[in-house]
Length: 131
Image (cartoon, rainbow, N blue to C red; front, side, top):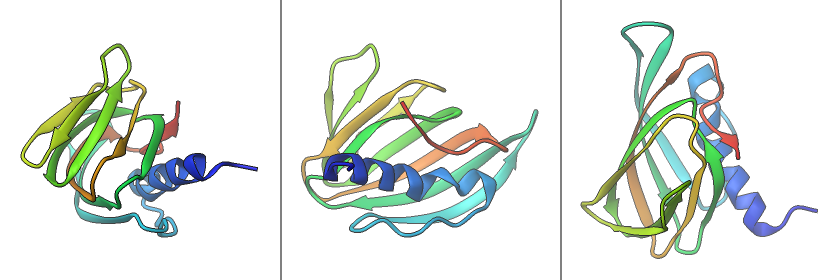
C-alpha cells in the first residue's frame, strides 16, 4: 500500500505528467494545475509548456525527472527543493529555479505554494517520471 507521501508525489507528477502527450489526467486532491499555453518548440520534436501549479502546505513532491528543462518561479508561498547533487534550498515568492533535463529532484511545500512553470521537453515523452 502506498503511503500518503508517495500518493501525493505520484499525484503531482500525474497532474503534470501527461500534458506533453495531450492526455488530461485526473485532478490530484488538493493540487491544482492549469495549462496556460502549449507550443511546438523550434527544432527536433520538442514542446514548450507553460503552466501554473498550486499545492497546499505540507505537500510532498517525490523525486522525479523531466525529459527537458524545468524553469519555475514561486509566485506565492514557500517550498523546499532538493536537486540531485545540490543541498536542499528554500524558495519564497519572487524566487525561481531551473532543473536540468533528466535530473532527479523533489521537495515539499512549507506554506501554500503557487508556481509558474515552463517546461521545454521532448514532445512524445511523459512530462514527469518517478526517480
